[in-house]
Amino acid sequence: MRRCSPQRSRSRAYSKGLLILGVLCASLVNAFALDREAFSFTNYDLNVQVEPEQHRLGVRGKITLRNDTATPQKIAVLQISYSLDWRSIKAGDKAVQFVRQPYTSDIDHTGSLSEAIVTLPQQVAPHASIDLDIAYEGVVLLDATRLTRIGAPEDSAKSTDWDEIGPSFSGVRGVGHVAWYPIATEVANLSEGDSLFEVLARWKARESGAKAHVDISVTRDDAELQELLVNEASCKPGYSQIGRSSLYKADCTFQQLGVTAPLFLAGTYRVIERPGVAVHFLPGHDAAAGSFADAAEKALPLITDWYGAQREKARVADLPSPNSAFESGALLITPLSSDDSKLAGLAATHQLTHASFLSFRPWIEEGLAHFAQALYLGQQSGRQAALDYMGAHRAALTAVEAASTAPRSDDEANHSLVNTTSEEFYRSKAMCVWWMLRDMLGDAALKKAIASYKPEQDIDPSYMPRLISAQTHRDLEWFFDDWVYRDHGLPDFKVDSAFTRKTVNGGFVLAVTLENLGTAGAEVPVIIKSPGGEVVKRIEVRAKSKATVRVEMAAAPQEIVVNDGSVPESGTKNNTFKVAAPQE
Image (cartoon, rainbow, N blue to C red; front, side, top):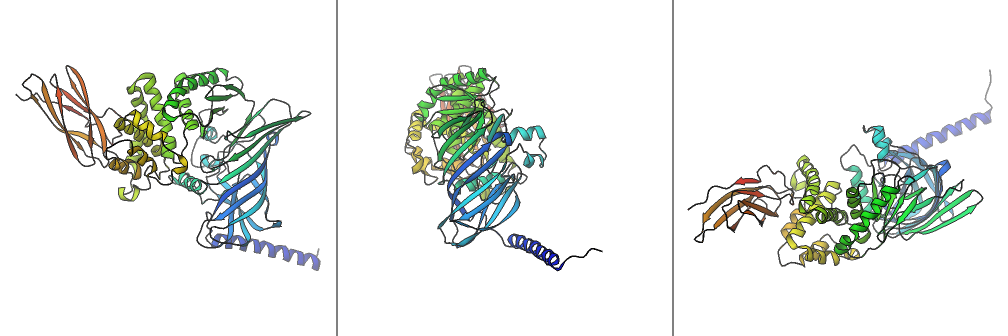
């Protein structure tokens, strides 16, 4: 029988003790509630090495953390994608202690994060900062775990979570897709309503003033011509070649991480340059790229008229994955596989708006971009085409409002346009709000309000509404309260009564009383139809109120239609009213 030596026994006991200590440490970490969002990241200075043939990402650099709590903090949490491994974390020249652990969260495409719980060398006082030197590396592979585990079909999931580093194409988005730079967030769960969007919104708010210097290098083992694209127009590109190896570089500085989070693409791109847009396309997509460039060139005068000169050139990058798209600032990533000029015009209009107008508030930034698409369709095919386009957005908004089960008083502030994390609100509802404002104020007044907007002066939610109100003598506070500051739901209009009488000169006078059964007010168009044509009047009807208008007509009115589709309503079944014969 083989015996262990005393030295080996002591070694085993020591190893066992370390294992127990490690388990205890992990248990203590989990036992004490970590404030994962105690620190914000105010600065990143990262050197990023990408090796497509090995699917590899390696990062070295420095980050600055600021204690945003009211108490001193000794523990900081750093999170990266689960497919990446922490190599070292230092404060100054000294390594700091940290515990690695997996942390389940859908903020990364793998559905999990590699979390480092760091014991700082000293407590960091409230609002004070500390610098950490970091190193980590690993692979970024196509991974749709977070979507497939909630039941999404695998093909659809991979088309949505297309991020990967590979020989033929590399595309890696940032927080919310792949945590390839350190973050710190609480758990985000796709199976729990808006959890992911709420966590992302908090991250963006905390990092709204953060800066990042990112020096990206992509090394290839062959001499095939590539292009490295980053979603920051001010990047300094670089290229060098040694034998058959090629090095592509981009030295980029991001001024507001919460507005534009770093992402990069690398592939065999070619480019079409036009005055307002650069279209980067993959082999075989020449026709679709040309169609997009043509559409952007045609839409540019409209965007310039509404939003002024471009801050930067809009950019479009081709995506191998079908049925997916992503935008970041003035960069649109989308498959260029169709030469449909109408779809290209809509997409180009949206991206040209982002290249011309900047706001960190989604209801303004995204709302105006979608509003521009409606303007574009209106210019191309008339008002009804714009209303038809908004119809799909109104349907989505109505469905979301109808599905809300929380008491309106509890939900109205969280779902307001100034606070919402819901795309149906800051895209669809916001677009309708801008269209309603256009109908109420007219083009000239709204253009002046938009032109006077300065993102650096937007320090409170009432800033843009004040700029708009300054262009009119009307009281608009009720409108902004119902539609912007709070989510008061939607209006519901109906004709309460309509009376017609003949006039002495042979004409007719119609008195129409509208009732708004809904919880939000609006100025709504009323179309009065007669054998002689149509008359359109606009009537302001506050929530749970009535309003009356009198209309003179040459022929007897026959039918009244409330709302042409420009105002979102909870229901439209009661929007048509047959007018009785006129009184003698």
